[in-house]
Amino acid sequence: MAERQPGPGPVTRPSATRGGGGGGGGSSTGATFLRRLHGHAPNSAQLVGFLTLVVSGGILLILTGLTLTATVLALIFFTPLVLLSSPIWVPAGTVIFIAIAGFLSMCALGVASLAGLSWVYKYMRGWHPPGSDRVDYARSRIADTASHVKDYAREYGGYLHSKVKDAAPGA
Image (cartoon, rainbow, N blue to C red; front, side):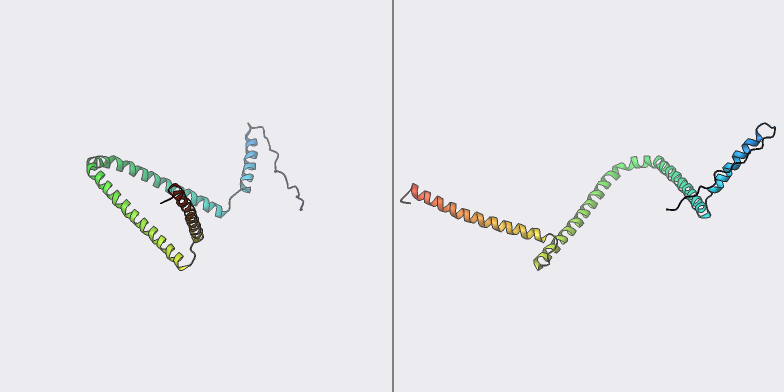
């Protein structure tokens, strides 16, 4: 590790007080403040960045004010027109909304059915699309369950047939 050498402490000058009413003490504090400020002075790139930030912020603030003012004025002037023409706008808006919702639903169902058909095509061709292992597992479970039910029905059906013969020997 490198050892840190203690740097020079803050430079202080003895203030020359000359029999006045306290004018000399303030200049020493001001000089120290200026030295500290000069030590933290930004370089030109930081200054340009700060000025860009101030100018951009000012422009955006002005545009925000103009937008808000225009919105309020538009609401003031166009509210009577909207209220008077609302019997036209509400049914038209409803019809347009239903038409757009129906069109988007039709498109979504078309995309979903195309995706499903594509998956089935890939599955039938043996290309193993994502999820095909689950379908194979479910198919084998269904086939196993069906064979178990068939075997159970044969056994139980034979049991019932023998009980019928016991109940009615001549049948």
